Image (cartoon, rainbow, N blue to C red):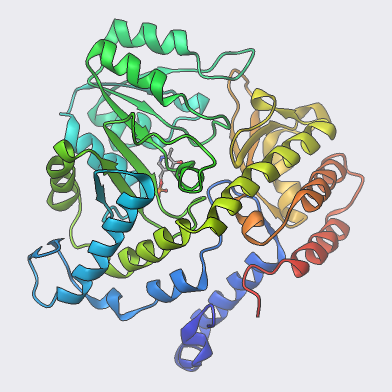
Length: 412
Ligand SMILES: *Cc1c(COP(=O)(O)O)cnc(C)c1O
């Protein structure tokens, strides 16, 4: 199966060579550079096939057997399958698979549980909170009264005492746990106990670790949180999109918060692709993948520390690493630029309790390509050489090309 079926049929190339060139150019970029952005991954050809399918044509507002449009019998089956597979995969009583993105899922969770003006306690943005956790530039910061907890200045770990104190002081209607940059497991049982102590809902925004949860490589928020929001396109390796898991008692509120409160028609091609990804994630092979992602991240973090970068929390439990390159004499932004020129693509991020920007990277995509310990050690060494200026971009780029050529994301 071709990765871009329409190109194989040559339809797009003949009708619209400009767009065809863009698709092939991006496939080439993804195949010849290292994708170290923590939130990215390579979906399977089967997921891509579902995304590029005629289900994209179908309007399906509402839920299976309760649609506002006719002709939904067949797409209903796709959504039922996705829901049943998500429930089984995560041991959840209810799953909503319609959220168009992780942010849409969080918006719907707030809509289900809160009213404008309610107080919400979440990880502060300087410590790895997402925009939807109270940024003034986002609906969350505009419509709710967010209080931010932080991480310990010494250890970089979530300050549990502060969470408890702030919860008792501010009596939030909801507590959010989850982050875009926290490299350690989150203690969901602890957050549950604080939420119970102050009568708050617990919302877990597990956009990043949900794929590790699916593969048994990270603890699950499902038994602890009232509502779990997630993406399907990060470590989970599905299509770009979101989902919500919750108990039966909140099912109707969550469903109504997604449609009709915050979204219109469901994207049935994406939902079919989510079903494919959930089935893939339920296999022993995916469990092995998830554990390898973490093993690779640990090796990479240790390697980067060996090159002199300072690793937040001293390491990782997950796919995600945040690092301060300033011991090598470069700030995060400069480092990201140099690494990009060398074909290593990653993000800058805020570093807790520091004025300088750091680097955020992850191992989900390179692990999908089949890379392991040896390659992680090699990538860490390349980082060191590029950041210290011992290897120019063109030479480093050759090394990266040699490496990626041996691990094509889409063989053939
Ligand atoms: C990625 C992420 C989101 C948002 O997902 P989008 O699909 O980009 O909207 C929300 N919360 C957290 C914690 C994330 O990591």
